[in-house]
View: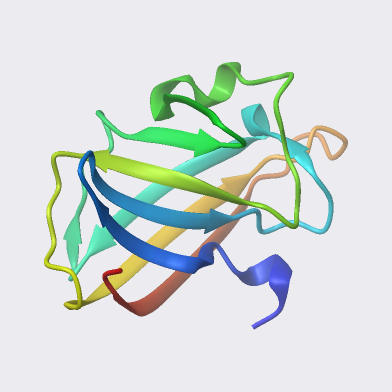
Length: 126
């Protein structure tokens, strides 16, 4: 899989005291403002995950996923992972789960373009 096709980061899925933490990668060939990125869907073991309480962590900062479109001055660099935090969700460390994530990108320099980027992986909880 080419780096621009990957949306699940190498760090994978982790159990934390706050909930689950999923590494995400920017599926584009150059850095973009977070406001041009949309976490369109997440399913774990075939069950859609409610993202209404989800948070995004990146470079020491955290904000609600619902505010992603407002992050016009915060850039996601192509070599960095961002993390999707799912408060209150629990999975046992070491257990394996089928994770399906779709991230859409809307590059600001290509008006009207919306590229959907799905990826499904079997991940072991760290």
